[in-house]
Amino acid sequence: MINWEELKHIHVINKLEEILAQWFNTDIFFIDERGQLRNYDQGDRRREFKNPLASHFLHSDKGRLLFLKSVADANEQLFKSSQSSLEGLGPAGIEKMFVSRIVADNEFLGSVVAYSYIESEASKEAQAQARKLLESYGLDGQKFAQASSQLKSISASQKKYFCELVDLVAQEIVTFHTEISKREERINALNSQLGNRYSYGSMIGKSKPMQDLYSLLDKIKSSESTVLIQGENGTGKELIARAIHYNSPRKDAQFVTVNCSAFNENLLDSELFGHVKGSFTGAVKDKKGLFEAAHQGTLFLDEIGDMPLSMQVKLLRVLQEGTLTPVGSTELRKVDVRVLAATNKDLKEMVEDGSFREDLYYRINVINLGVPPLRDRKEDIPILIDHFLSRGCKEKNLPLKNFAKRTMEKIFDYNWPGNIRELENEVERLIVLSGEDKVIPVELLSQRIRDQGDSIKIQGARVAGKLKDSLEELEKTMIKEGLKRTNWNKSRLAKELGISRAGLIMKVEKYNLDKRKIPRSGSGSAEAA
Image: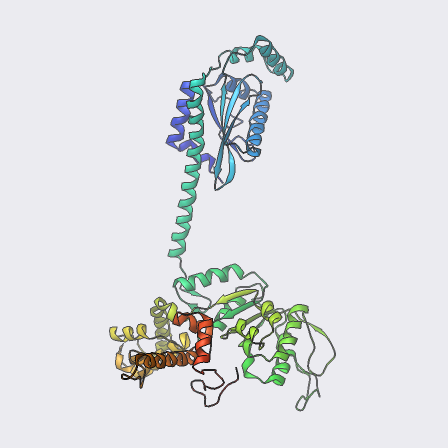
């Protein structure tokens, strides 16, 4: 909205008003989008006006009502038209006013009214009719006749300049409003930068990806919608889930978490939905499931991508209907639970290959939060290290330590596939190994971090023979290692390699790199696709 009060302090607008008053004996009035007069105090009857009819109308109660209705009608007429300005008649019907539109960002904010002038003397008959009309409203006809005789006559050649000056007043108001809005936006942006949070809940980071994440969390904190948190292992998905819960209206109720990959199908069924006594061997008493335990609170389903298809059906029913049936029971129970889910898998790809239900995917993916990996927010590493060092040294009653410059360089160069969890574990390891030393040297870093430069060397790469064969061998090795590193996430690996996902799939088939035929890193058995 325009700050109408501030307009009286704008030098350019004041000068334009003076010129219009001196040359044309007109007064300038500002009308807001509701038709209200904004630069005239209705209680101030001592204000002087350059225009004689403006004085006549605005210095009496009845005349003021006629004037206000007249300019409000002109403002409304301009709003409804497609014109940038128009010429209308004043309340007496013989004098004219020029009305110029105030528009900013395609929004009608009001108008500027220049009142009043004539282009030629009104006929005696018209003057008599105007006088009679005003007298019928209780105004002094003689004073009106005297005032109207003093109106400035504007010639056709003067009219062009007059209209341009009035339009210029409207343009200056728009300029002022736009500049103020930009200044406020800039101030808000600066305040946001100055107030950039280094943390949100238990999360830490000041990088752009983290600030974007904090902003999104602010927007959804009052929501009851289901949230899907996606990110690599070790990025802090559970911390985000906790932050959502403890900043939500459910913060005083239970936050319950379950790892869907930690149970087989039968145990997960009982864990989530509960069971009744005797429903299976070992069910010696009734047991409430985690959904009931989280009633009126939040249930966090971690690693939801590992949930069996049969369980996905039961979960979908709870999300849609808010009811569940414990194992071994036929009784429907109502629950009021907000569900947050997390996964490091590509659920969309799983939907395509039939290992994850499409209806459940869209039900849990109402709001999607992508957690940036540490390699995409390396400016957060110093803050995270300071936090882990401070906490670790305090827990172990050690003086606060620092990293040597070379140590920090190696840490920044490392890709951190294990993300925050890997960094936290490394810092704890370094605190222990450095003993009483206050500076942690590069030699104490784990071998994989010190030798990150060597990791780009392909062991056994051929340096003789045909170039085509060597390139294909290198390509195969890069794809094979990349698939293991990204947990067979083809979309992510394609992005890393700078090729299309379809192109990557073709190369996987070409080099026979199906994950059923290649054991993952750290596993001696092949896994199903």
